[in-house]
Image (cartoon, rainbow, N blue to C red; front, side, top):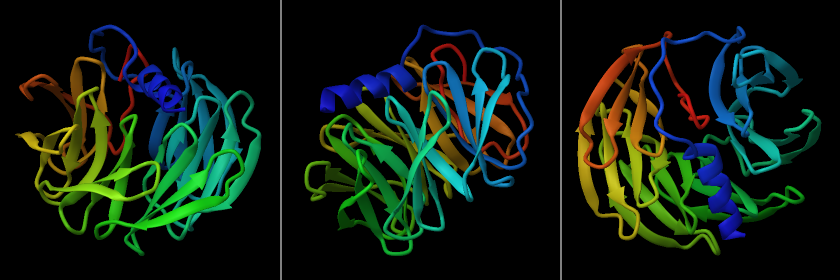
Length: 281
């Protein structure tokens, strides 16, 4: 199943050739978009303002569906279904092909981040300083594991779950098999979200306006690179790292090999989430 998860990851996050940056295009209007994910052909967006999950055609932004979900926040795609978390402590499973809601399940308390390991969905619980492991097939809780203070974003690298502990300025690397901590690594202020480039784990440091690059094998710090103000979300396009600069209304592009700044680009107000569809950011 780990191979399955790796295939899903690279299909949804790292697939495609280099692309040319185009002028921003605005898609369907969403009251309060929070996060986005790609299922291969469509873009799914959580709309916490209208309490719904929105499905858009990636090629032109055509609205394909709107599905009621209470206060949806972050989301992931497991190869067949879209999962979203809410700060009310619920995860919802939605069938990607038609938007049918397959179930809503307890998430161990108010939830923030979400990841998929090939068999299980993981969510971070910032109020209890834990992460919860949920069996994807039936939504049952497999386990709950202590991590650092106020865990936020999560990442699965094919073997381990990485946790951004916003309250302790650290990240935990935990074994997906049993939730045990394999390492704890110091980054900068208020780590938020992750990207994986195949070898290295990248994390946005929201409070220090930087991103940190950690070697996936041992967590050693490869480099820390300045970006815009309050970087939140991060994505890898197979060559470059893209970061949303929430307070600057921009995205920053870094070369993944060495962190070199390649450009900053104006986008809409308060960009909070970013994803790669194989051709475009």
